Length: 75
Image (tube, rainbow, N blue to C red; front, top):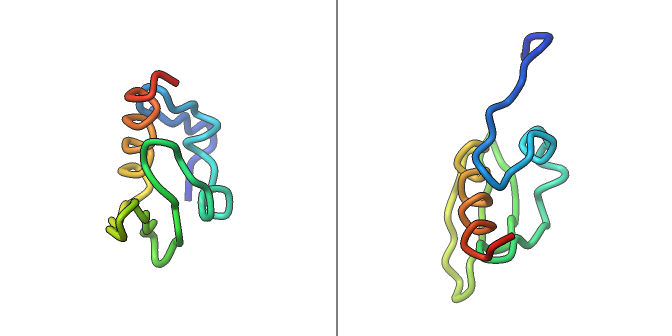
C-alpha cells in the first residue's frame, strides 16, 4: 500500500499522472515505437511487438520503455 504523500519519480517523457495509471488504463493500448500492451497478469505486463515477438515488463520497466519510445519518436 502506498503511503499518503507518495510522489512517483517517473522517467523522462512520462508524466507522474501516466506513471500512476493502473493496468486497466494501459492494457489494450498501442504505444507508438513500442508495441501493444496486450495483458497484465500477476504484476507483469505483456507487450506484443510487430513480427510476433512478446516481452514482459514490471510496471517500472514498462514506464521506462514507454519513455524511451516517446523520446525516440520525439514526443
